Image (tube, rainbow, N blue to C red; front, side, top):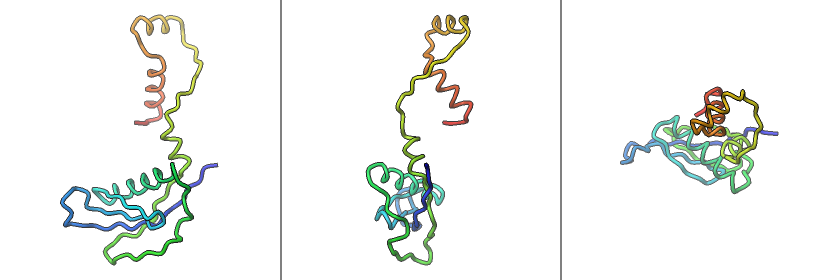
Length: 130
């Protein structure tokens, strides 16, 4: 069963940073850092950091590490469903059997259409996925 967990996260803004990544993100429970170009991007990057960490390491219980934040920092919770994160990265092909009219099969073969790619593209379009 999937479950979401939320990690305390500290986001600092550094206007002296020379790159576009002016938002520094610290995730105390993982002792990990990442960056973002905006506050929203920093949160997305924190979620990705936690998810990537979870691929090779067990996630600790959130909120067990104490930390200090400056008054100007944003302290927030970043949630992630590690099982969902892992599934979204899984590109393992799954064999499906389908039925289409004979004339479509013949026309697609004549055009050199890749049935698997066409079906995957159609499903992504139908689900509004990238």
